[in-house]
Image (cartoon, rainbow, N blue to C red; front, side, top):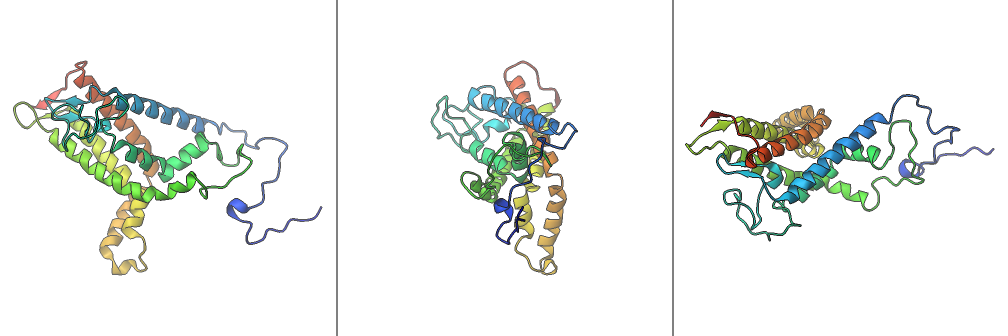
Length: 272
């Protein structure tokens, strides 16, 4: 058999295929468990978030100014008075979320996130499902063609995520109110915790690491940016953890606001 010589152009997506094996995989461990858990976890979040975004109810607690992050900023003409901190100008329609300006940007920020790419590439697209496990696709083009080439605009969605995180922070600050003035309740603790963790996820983004320390030839000439880069790099090592933790805190925060707004539970007050 004539040997195949790999030239310099046959690399990456143009490399020759792997040798065919008599079995689908040589792995004997339960490699399918992590992809399965990822499918279950992300599916639960997508289903819950979609339902709540279009429910258009139980998102605002007027007494304590609790606003769920799924409705922030609330800019629809249907938003309750007090919940629209930046005005109401979007049409009120059942198919248009009250936070129609922010939710698509946040969705695109997470979809193009480096960690989430790995998560859904392996779990939903099986490309590949796990290390040393062949993928079912006959061809692989990576992120060189539509639609996956659009993953490269992730850096721009990062800026939008920063702005929305600032808005969420503003919402959490406004929530320190009660009918008597300053107030503090369990809801405040949940809102602040969620905001802090959202900031950790946003700032641990690979794009943020590039913004703080990218395009520099000499760190010694830019001590401030180098200091920022080291801090962001430390967060970046936990980007996966923050990605999953914030999915949980978003659901928890929204569910808590829903329960208080619907009257199912009362907000335990510490002050006010």
